[in-house]
Image (cartoon, rainbow, N blue to C red; front, top):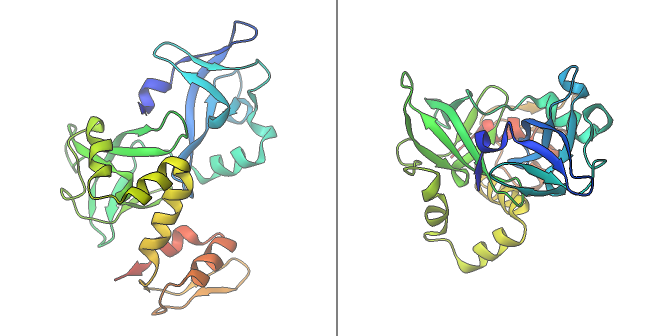
Length: 247
């Protein structure tokens, strides 16, 4: 597990050429999967002309450098549609307010950590409103949705907090069935998605959700089913659905 500040700024080295490709400028977070899917590598010009490398194509993230196999692995951001789509969603995390499902602003994200193998976000370090010092870390099992302006959590603070990033693994394992641990280890991104969907099932939609083409994705008062979730994903309204459900 690495904090974002331990990754940003690292030189990117191509192993085959033993040459520096650039420097890590940032991480592109996909709100649908809760993961840093791309590393952005600094390059002259605007942000869209930076280089990107898929997280899965990183060889290693060391204490001093980040390595890729070959110099051609990083490609221009503008040439990768998936990366542009993630960039356009503008999920920056650091500095983003955290809101509970009950509509209370719980704090602001100061830092986040990712799994070194998958890029999955493992926890969010939170400062309480009006404070600079971190109050603790929210394990991502408590995250309902990542958005441009807010991150929504399932539980009120301080119930959702652990003392720090070092407490994430033990905290996530407590009470977790062996089958769930195995599923998470096999495919952490899929596990995260399934956990979110399971949380939504059976909840009640609090307002009508309509797709851009006019299709009604869900009616106010409708119970969330697998079909409703699939329809929301199909029409790019999944985040809106997660933000508008109640018990």
